[in-house]
Length: 372
Image (cartoon, rainbow, N blue to C red):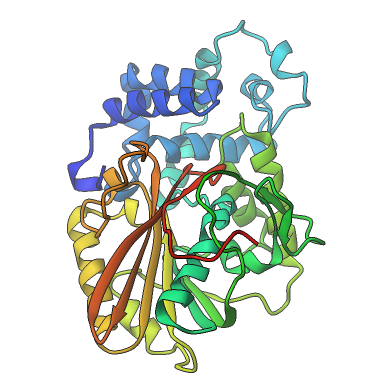
């Protein structure tokens, strides 16, 4: 839910436990269920600022310390930290929660500064499997062969490098087939076009930009992933390594996605229409701030040709224009929404539904070219 409409922390951890269980993350399922019933750990999680007061922040802070070499039995529970068979040999029995609780209480002095200053920043590159056809649809809707890009909540800017990745939708590999980063996606419905428009210019903004060449910053980004999803973790590590090797990678400026949007857009070249996009970034805004973002986008659309593309969970963004899914749509899926502005008049379409991490895609838009 939007932050001001959100559940209390205990309810959030219970809800997150269910999400983790359904998404193949038993470690976080059990840990989150335990935190929900533990007043001391809930008080620790409450150290974070209101807009970041979510289960993911405490979980990321713990994994950040473990990835940094903290020697505690809890590390044997994490596939991202321990050797492949270590989790099966973890001391303390099958239940990881006692180790997690001991770690948090014994490392409280190290965790509190992280909780008070850090933000959840997944920069999930798996969502690029939806962004590629989304950008193709945006260029088609605007009737142009090229775009400029601005990503909101860009973190390390990895999704701005989406033309540097390979994509496997089950019918052959698209994109850069030589890339060390291969993103797999099950296409469950429809036939999206996968030919990216020419990208003339690109930039990101984020309140806390991540430098992929800085070890603690890159480690924080990795810590925000779920330790049960080892392949996802390794894929992000490969993307960070790729980004660090690109001397001319797109910049990510330190700015607020609502308050500073107009000022950043004023720096964007006008040689091609602008596409502003974001993935699971507006979910961290209050519903009032989401409405302010929508108003800012409408104002920009009155001034210049514009496409607004986002992948967000509808229940998390009540302040954004999210058309309903078709009857065969799946409740709880992330929605890919495209709003284009022609002479200031907006048109919003729900292009697709997708797995929150991009594992599958249901493409609803029927006016795009065949898969290629």
